[in-house]
Length: 389
Image 1: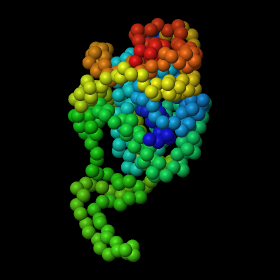
Image 2: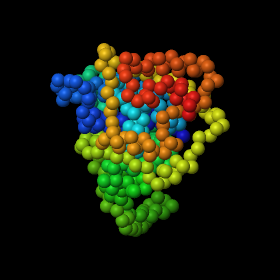
Image 3: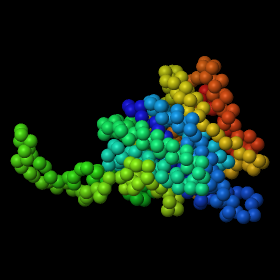
Image 4: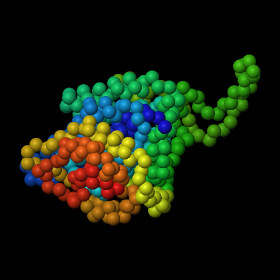
C-alpha cells in the first residue's frame, strides 16, 4: 500500500463532490423570500462552492494531508466529506449525502480504472483542480490556495517512478474494491453493466509511449530482431496524439476527471444485486478495532486543520436535495441497506479521554449556530457519531 495515495484520493473525490453540488445547485431553486430569486440563486451557489473550496484547501489541512500516511477506512474518510459538504449554508439529509458519496466514489473508481497509465492518475487530479479553479475565477484568495496545492502535487509526485504510481493506482483500486453501485450516466453511456461493474474499452488511443497492439517482434540472444508476426487484437486502437501536460498550465489531453455533469441531466444511483448481497453479509465486528485509535488520531489531525466558516447574520441554511423529488429521497433512505449507510463512524474511542477532549474542541469549531435543523440527524456531535458506530 502506498503512503502517497491519500492526497490524490481526497482531492479527486472532493472535485467530484463539487461537480455534483454545482450541478444540483443550478438545477434546484433555493427556497426563500427573495425579490430577485434567480440572481440570489447564483449568488448562493457561488457562496456554497467558495465556502467548501476554502475549507477543502485550507493550508493547515493540506499540510497534514500531504504527510506520508496509509489510507484509513471508508467510514473515517466519509466523515471528513460529510463535514466538508456542510461547511457552508447548505444542508443535506442522510439519503442525499449517501447518494452524493456514492456518485463521488463510483466516478473516481471509473477514472482510476480507465487510466491508460498509472501516472495518469496525476492528470486526473489536475483535471479536477483545473475545473475547481474555474469555479472560483472571481476569488483571488481561493485561487492562490488551489495554486499552492497544485505546486505541492507537482513537487511531491513529479519525480515518482512508474512503479510508485502503479502502487498508488493499486492502492486506490483496493480502496474502491467491491463497490458496484449503478449510476444512470454510466449506464446510459454503456460504460457500466447492470451489475454495477465497469466496461473496459477496446478502442481509442493506447497509453502514451506504447504502440498499437497487433505486432510481435522476436529477438535473438544478441538483441537483434530476427522475425515479426502479426495477430488480430479485436479492438480499434490508435496511437496517442501527444502526452498530457504535467505542468502547472497545459493541455491534459486525458478527459478523465473533467466535469461529466456539465450537460444537465438527472443522475440516479442504484444498488446492484452483488452489492446488496455483499451488504447482507457485512456485519460490524463486536471486538474492538485495533486501528480505532489510529483512525481517531487521523480524523483529529485532519479535521483540526479544517476551518469551517460560520454563517454571518440571521440567514438560515438551505436544504439541497440530490434526488428529483422529496419522495424519491425518502424512499432511498428507507431502501438503502443499513450496512452501507455512513451515518455514523464505527470507532471505539470512549477510553481515550485526552483525544475525546481534542475532538470536542475541534467539533466546537464545526458548530453552526443560529440555524434551524431541517433533520434530526444533522449537526450530530462527531464524538457521538464515532461512539455509536
